[in-house]
Structures are given as C-alpha cells and as structure tokens.
Amino acid sequence: MLEEFKYKLGLIKKKKNIALLVDGPNVLRKEFKIDLEKVKRKIAKHGNIKVAKVFLDQYASDKLIEAVTNQGFEPVITPTDVDVWLAVDAMEQIYNPAIDIIAIMSRDADYQPVLLKAKAKGKETIVIGIEPGFSAALKNTADVVIMADKE
Image (cartoon, rainbow, N blue to C red):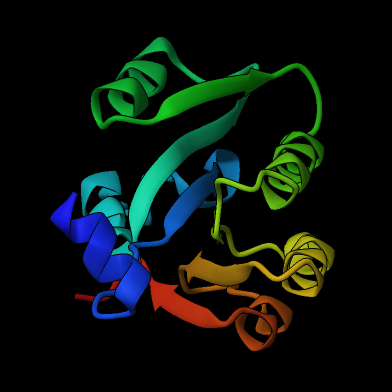
C-alpha cells in the first residue's frame, strides 16, 4: 500500500515488465556456452521478467528442453521456422498492455521489423546478442544491447 502511494506521488518508479524471447537454434549452441541464468540476471536489471520463452525446433533434444525448463524458461517447440513463431509471439507481447519491454535474444536481423514495431507502439526494446554474427541491424535498432557472452 505504501509502495503504491509512493508510486502515485512519483517518489518511486514502477519496475517495468519484460517479455524475454530466445531464438534457441540461433544462440543455444555448444560453441557459445550460453548460461541462461546469467542472461536472466542481466535482463532483470531492467525490470521484472514476466514472460520467459525459448523457441526450439522439432529437432531439439530432450536434454536441451529439460535444461531450458530447469532454468525457468517455457520451451516452445515449433514444427516449422522458429523465427516466425518467435516473431508472432513477440507481436502478441507488443500488444499486451502488461508488458513494457520486449527483449529478444538472437543474432538474426530477421527480428528488426519486430523491434521497430515494438518501438512504434511505445515499448522499450532490448536485444541480447552473441558474437560472431551478431546483426548490426539489431544492435542499431534496439534501445539497449546486452552481450550474453560478456560479464
């Protein structure tokens, strides 16, 4: 109650709600050694993670699906192109009034239109990337860029 009163008076800022969407086949590769727990900690500095999904294709191993689940993410297994499914979900989150920030973890320039639409609809955008191959278009479109493989 006191927190709500302080918020209404403008004494404190409400933490923003984040939808975190991960392009699994693009970033969850053995050579990248990505720790999704670290990614969540980095993102949580920007607000409350309300949606955390990892999109995987139909070839994802049971071990990978279990690991994703154990790290607090909802695995979404797609029968076709992961990019399309993630983009559709991102659009749903853009129109979700409870979400303030759209965070996409990928290296793929295909998500630039999603980021542009999010910004046009008043959402903040975060991109979590990895080198090599991190799209310059994503870096230059997002409000915040976080490197997953850096401390």
